[in-house]
Image (cartoon, rainbow, N blue to C red; front, top):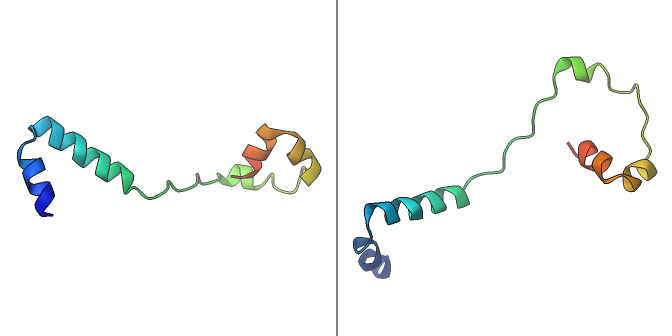
Length: 66
């Protein structure tokens, strides 16, 4: 900590705020996946999508990852 004390004491309040914001954001945990509404859960199993179709369509692959 000693090398940082001198550096921090020479910073303005705005610079300290920027450093704290950076540290906080770098420590954030990954966001939770969105919850699927019950109405959409009822639709499961109605459509069958093959792995081949997913591999051919990057948008579909992205949606299926959720």
